[in-house]
Image 1 (cartoon, rainbow, N blue to C red):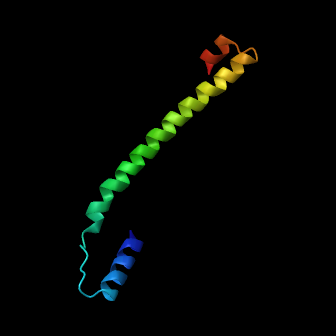
Image 2 (image 1 turned 120 degrees about the horizontal axis):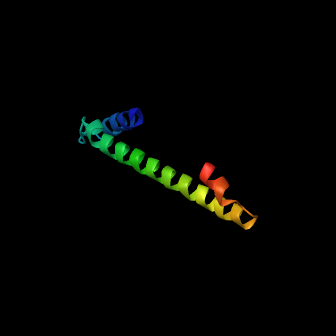
Image 3 (image 1 turned 90 degrees about the vertical axis):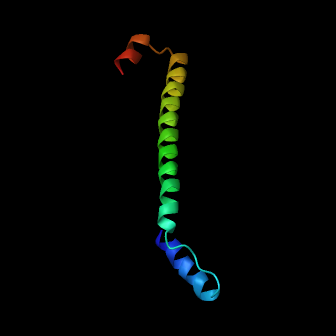
Length: 71
């Protein structure tokens, strides 16, 4: 966010006719929140998939069903 403000000020100093909206934080926060939510969902899905994939490999080398239920 600080970089955005810095580059915004730089653009305004180079091009005097351009004025950027100073409320850019209000526009950026929803995007950041959505990205955090999506990243969390992907991490949860990946973790579940990794567990299932690991179990499928373990089954091929004689995995025990009772052992899986204890984990």
